[in-house]
Image (tube, rainbow, N blue to C red; front, top):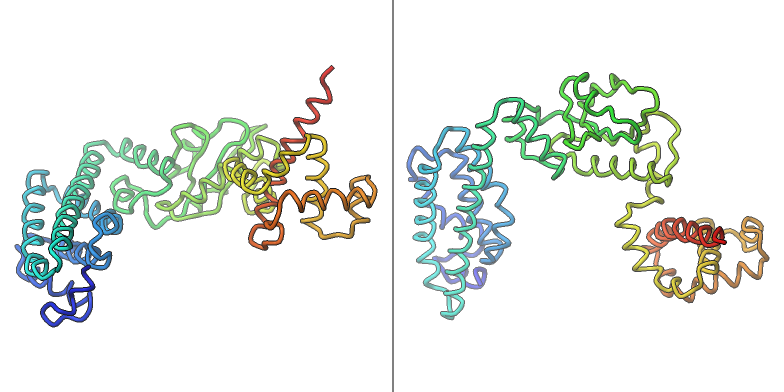
Length: 376
């Protein structure tokens, strides 16, 4: 809707020109408004225009920025009363500036829809700013150690924390950290005491260690850990998830550990095949449902031969020798697998997913078959 009327309004021909026109009054805002706040108002206006007046999409785009505005206000010592007053001024001015533009929107139902969308968006922006203020204010009320612990809790829970909150907690936002997860033993708290700058997971099973301090990690006899790749501390989530997944795979016996400290990079191939429980389960449901129609022992046999064929594309005679069956049996099992898995086997994009699903499912099926065989 916005794009359709800009050509007819004040001679404007693109969205950038519309944003500039809507924000022209910002040159005269009260002097106590910091430049960063003015830039944020421009960014919010641009988000609403670019998303064609979709308030939810625009709010998602600028929400983190608006929370940062609120946090900066808290750090500068602005009370929530003052912040609400400033926000009321900004919201009123944005609505006033948009009035002349909205009056040109036709038909009237589109005009009303845009007005409601703008009102909703401005309310979402206001809420985000106030939420950021509450967040920083609550952190500022804590002592240094408690601040650090609270931000560490957020890192281990969400995997990311804005740089300004890291700074408030006394954590260098430009520093790289390495996730360390205990597979056996329980020395995380000890490591947090002995190494400088370490952040401790409240569960006591994991720490984030400054990259330069990892070499100083001391383990007691019988302890085994897995380390993730180094990442900037504020965006540690992917590395932390990988290290936790690797530790779980080791504990389940899906990945073999060969030393007290194992880097995820050293077992990357095994981790891919082990898959995360959630992911491998989804892949099995998607691709292997047809195999579930087979009786358990036959399902294991078909799955094993099919997996070898998918991974090696070796001649049937070699696969037969590896699995101690006849060449005809290999042929029959592969044909059965092709029939039950269907067109997915011919899709190169699905190949790796099927291999991962088979690895995870065969381990479970084989264990179940062995348990049945051992019953009296």
